Length: 302
Length: 262
Image (tube, each protein chain N blue to C red):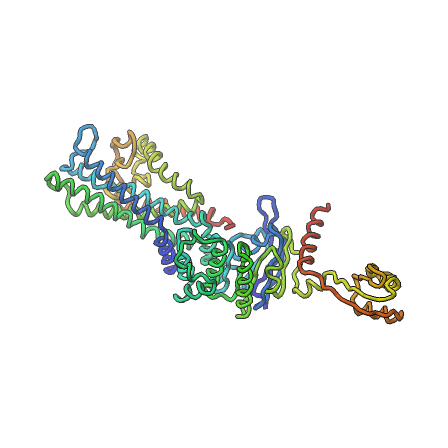
């Protein structure tokens, strides 16, 4: 069942279309990566979903309702939208006390979430003295304070050091393991690739693709490397069938556009001996870059 | 709604600015009370001796600055959320923005009244010390003096709420703070000085008359000494300020409050 449904969502700011008819859904219990380069419209989309920005057209619902119509919204959705959303003069603990009070969370939750994000030791320090990484953790703690079933996180890895990114991955996996639905945005696929079930990719305000990680790589270019004494013959046969085959050495061919099964069958039909085949899956990051880059080209071409 | 008001109060008491402004209000009230008391009875100052009812009233109702600072606090309660981007978190918790405005106004009323109380007690206290030091008799009844303190509480509370409305309408914190002082000190003095008939209806002037100040007593420059007209009755003055606040809040809820939080 879809808990987040975004349909034809569009936002125009003074002539600039930041989000252009974006449609996607997030199923319950899934961890979805919301990806795209900086300026792709991810933050604006999330802010429309959360009722902070009014869409020019289209809809965005959570559990079938607009954010504004949710009863006790903090118990339904926890959002961490930016690292600087705390009053600098307040301690982390007081910041969370406010979030807990307004959301009606149990009094013990403040200490619990401080523990979850590893900020117990800094709880009574003023937020103004926090590093960017600590603010990110505090923003996550704020999102978690009312124990929501859905989490919306905007670039939570920004400002985290490699250790912090590792910590975030572990936390996201743990939250997913608890059965929560997570929509997490990032401009770096690698940050979330190990955690997400599927991805929604945005570029220049438009939806590029919505798919599972497996489908995303399947849609990418596989390279099959074959070692055979009749490299030239095999290359000719495969090229004749529409694949892209290149003889890279007297006994080696690199083929794209055909699976190893198809290549093996062709070789068997023509009694071409094959000593070795290796299939190299497409690199996720390459697929991501290709998808967002091709959208860019479409934009530029009149 | 109770939870929301508690939250806004918790925000106020965990903000150092609240204590800073209250401290400034107390310090300024003490300073101006001392000045008025030392000036009282001296020729050319226009302040009657504190042995007279008029003189004692002047020196014990120096509560205007505290009321203005309550208004400043009110405005910051509203638009400070934008300065530090905390509005995002606030509206995530309470997407109905008008409810946030209402609870902020109620929280500001509670803390604003404290500004009025502190200023009223200081101003009356300093006046009484001077009366005792001079060995004068008390020219105003205890009931009247307490009434002035109560008026300062009501005036500061209402101006704090009006501050919330103004701060909700104008998101720039600096512009609002400057605007509040310019309005109260310059514009009300000029308009009140030129058209004495309008004077009782000016919100800051009306708030000071609630606290027992002479109509025009809060004005600066030549308008300060200008007499004429009588203040609105207590209830009417309070209702006027409340109405201006509600009107401003309604405009804010139809304009600024609806804007995107980016």
